[in-house]
Image (cartoon, rainbow, N blue to C red; front, side):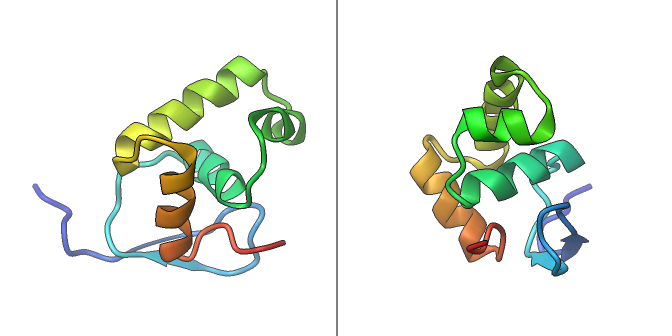
Length: 90
């Protein structure tokens, strides 16, 4: 069953607003949290320290997010996330 065209809602722990996304790329809650921080221009080291994860685990999550949202680098991920209202300036 295709989810294209549906609207999905989620909230990240670092955002006080409800974020509406045009389509669901099947991101986990943790991946959405990671994407929010990537979109805020946080480094993997900063994300790892904030979330109590290893840098390797963060790197794996970032890679998974990039695959799911179909981007090849951090810059494109930031643009795509911000277009969806994720990762506003804090």
